[in-house]
Amino acid sequence: MNSGRTIFAQLMDRLPLVEFRRCVDRYGGDYKVQSFSCLDQFLCLAFAQLTYRESLRDIETCLRAHQRQLYHMGFRGGVSRNNLANANLQRDWRIYADFAQILIRTARELYQHEAFGVELDETVYAFDSTTVDLCLTLFPWAQFRRRKSAVKLHTLLDLRGNIPTAVYVAGGQVNDVKLLDQLVLEAGAFYLLDRGYIDYRRLYLITQALAFFVTRAEHNTRYRRCAWRGVDRSTGLRSDQTIRLTGPQSSRRYPAPLRRIHYFDAEKDLRLVFLTNNFQLQALTIAELYRERWQVELFFRWIKQHLRIRAFYGTSPNAVKTQVWVAISVYVLVAILKKQLQLDLSLYKILQILSVTIFEKSPISLAFLQYNDRISEPDACIQLDLFNI
Image 1: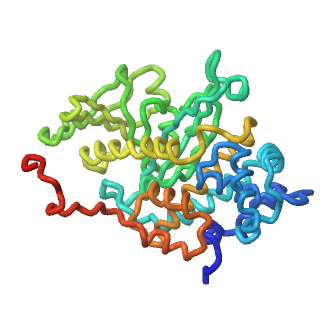
Image 2: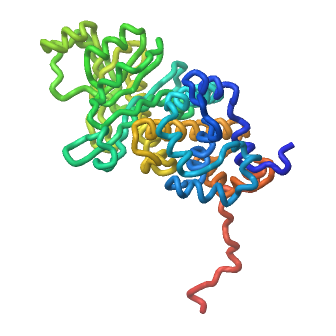
Image 3: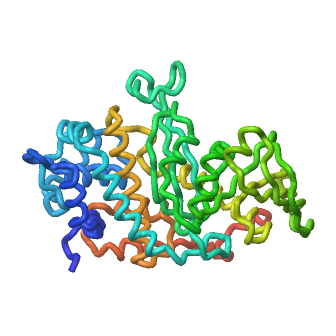
């Protein structure tokens, strides 16, 4: 069925194009467009992500080298630097943000029963941000410090499958805690936050939404102990208390009781104090939950290393957000491919294989069947004995 079709075309076949066209129509993306459609733009940027292209000229050169195959890969418009630059500047980035959400919903359905280190039925999210440094001259709209620009990617990561469910792109000058206002809170879900997101008024909104949070307590937190529970100190736990905030501002902003858990990490010789509004889970489970927040840090490191978000193809806010959302779409699409083909490979290895087989004409599953993840042990009988020479 896939005979004569490139790996890239077979991968793009997994995109719900009907939904993509609805996103385009919603924002008038192809209004008065003659030759280079939003789909052409998406395919170009997806190709750039999959093959690690560094610039618009790089994208143009590589695609034009395969001019005869472009039509069969889904391209209908002329691929050029000018077309792609103008599209990145003018086409509404929300087209690709909405389309990424459609892919995210598909991926979450596939990974909904995935284990993530803690036995818990509820959905668990980790929310954090990473900073991408930029040139102040080229990106003045994202000025971060006096001589520096930066954008922050605030990401809500579903720990089942490490699927980014929401990404907010903001200038580096925007305070992290303000992005909590953008979250659509899910009742019964857990939100893992670091201390940079502590704002008791906003944390109380999470409680009112019938959701749960786990965060690190600030060192100067003023509180009154109301009750306590016994703990097994051999597990690292030191205390499990019910408290009420007593600070003049904090007590007004968070009038409900909180749970304060003191944990000692013997491996790192580190004392950790957690605050949560959940009183049902075991104290050790709360500590283990917060440890899983590290997955979002690994996610940021992964996308910076393997996706093109450290160097942007355009300097406008629209171009930056478009590139980020296409990168997220490619990440999620590869995660979907992994689950649908039941591949026992990491996303990194899948991306590496795709990058070198993108123009091959064979069933996409064969590209991964030939991969051997195990390094064969050398035969001992053919090894030289250095001491008998």
